[in-house]
Length: 106
Image 1 (cartoon, rainbow, N blue to C red):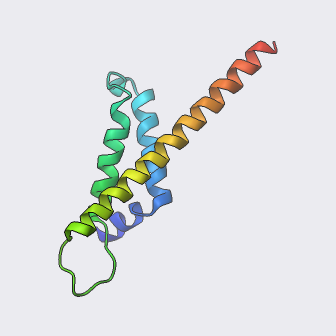
Image 2: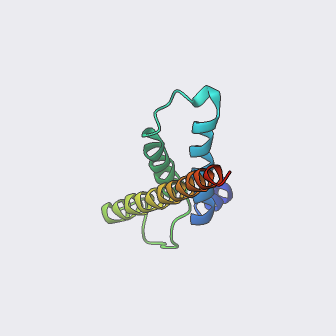
């Protein structure tokens, strides 16, 4: 289990998982009723759970998560979510502008 959560804890893998989740909510008919504004909230919660469940730094003296460690994990999850939201918005804007430009040229 630690290997799977450790794999998901990789920032690149987590970004891909969050992007796929956001696209799935927008494209799957069963999930289409969910408001788009909830996607970053769910992505942030997903990132926080993965960061909390993932293997931590190798500190033998620390048992559990301290207050500063928890704040650090929350900030990491928030930064990860902002990054993913920015990537998704950028891609969406690029493709929308590309579609508009290609329709105008016809």
